[in-house]
Image (cartoon, rainbow, N blue to C red; front, side, top):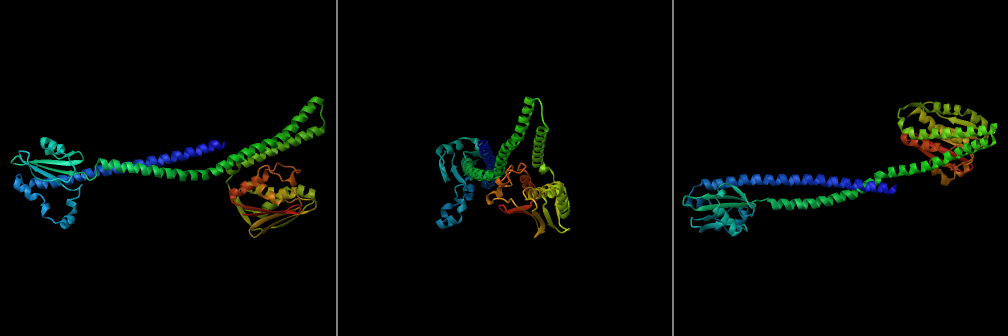
Length: 407
């Protein structure tokens, strides 16, 4: 079971980290794709405007030269001041070639090959603005059949895009791995109640099976005895009936323990009236053991809860005080400092056993010989957890036990 839970936790962590990775990756690629196409669109418009200004200045050699920047006249300091003209990915490269393919003037700051230039010179498709090998290119034919080529490198080309996406994939992977580690820790904490419930269920099944076996064994042996004897006596029937009553009591306890979360209807309950009702229901047992009951609860004390479960909660503590009390001893019930205190005398609980009394089917050594299955205090604890009632226990072995309930 633990192996399956660990496998499930790991699977959940991997699935969650993968989802985060995919989502972040899609968002990142979408962002860089939008950026890539937006940059191309913007640069295309910018290049079109700048080449149009040059082309519209005139269609002859002299007019064109007047539009070209005279970079040689600038000092190094002045070149720095107009840095935008010299930035690799913003500068307009140009070359003027006469009809004999002799270069008349050129300012090329990109690492382009001779084939790149020759291809443009020989191909008239570049008379229209063209994107070629990460460059915007425009060729202008002058009236003397000279060719003026302008080209500009993209500031954000496909290589930049791929590089950004590659880095983003790496960062996304590292981020997802970090999320995996964090989520694994988070899932471990989330599964603690699940693992506890599974363990609790396993213990519950084991203990319930053990408790059910005992009366069933008695019933089986008595039935076999009756069968062998071909007769029966009243004591056997009484014993069988007692065991059936025990089984019904246990089954009823288990049903209440499992269905308690379904009862969420609440009402205002007068605490004094509720305690009186419980004491009246236990009157025969109290009289039988001649126990003295002292009660001090003001009439105006109320609590909000489902009455059936408030009854189960308080009655089980009072019943324990009766069941584990000595004949002709006493029980004190009072409401003090916002707490209901129920104190009995006699058996008491060992210090080491106090925290165990809430476990299902647990019975301390001092109560082994008393009737019951040790299930009701676990029911009390569950009711208290639902309504956030704080119950503390104090005891002196063989002297007294005190339950304090803060509503």
